[in-house]
Each structure stands twice: as C-alpha cells, then as structure tokens.
Image (cartoon, rainbow, N blue to C red):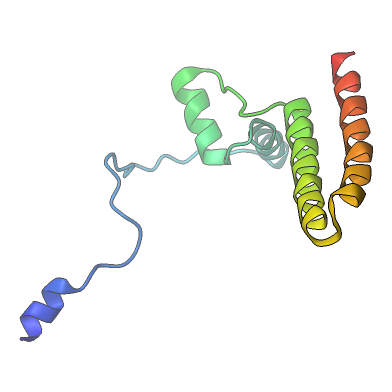
Length: 118
C-alpha cells in the first residue's frame, strides 16, 4: 500500500523547463562597468543575466516600457483605484454624493490627458 501512496505523491518545486540552460560562462567586470551594466538592465526592466544574454545574442535589448509609459500606467492605476473607492461610496452613501466625487476625478483625468497631448 505504501507504493500506491508514494506514486500518488506530487513532486514539489518548480516545473522542469523545456530548454535547460546548463552551461555557465563567467564575465568579469570592473566595479564601474558592473554599475553601468546594472543600470542599463534596470532601465530595460530586465535582470543582469537576461540583459547580458540578449546583448550577446541579439546585439540589442528592447526595453519593456519607457519611463513615460510607466508613469502613465501608474497614474491610470491610481485612477482605477479611485473609481473603485467611488463605487463603494456610491453603494454606501448613495448616488448623489458619489456623483460629486466622480466629477472631481473626471476633471483630474481630463487634466492628465491634456498634459499627455502636449
């Protein structure tokens, strides 16, 4: 009976990858060079190993998001959070009070859109 219980047991841990990266190649950097590579990898939104691998294989790295796109997403998430709070307020306190708060959020959103159009 123990063999059946052992067979039903699931192995824990991370699933096996289809393509295993098993060869390690070392690269030495001075402190200044390492700092520069680390900053470039952070700017691209990647880890240092992934950044170096893509630079070695492709000769270029495509950044995930620009700083402007990150700021726009952060602002949009803040607006979404405010709308969720507004919905909760509408359910608790009534639609009229929520409408007044909604007008202020709408005006802020319009100002944000005007800044990005410039």
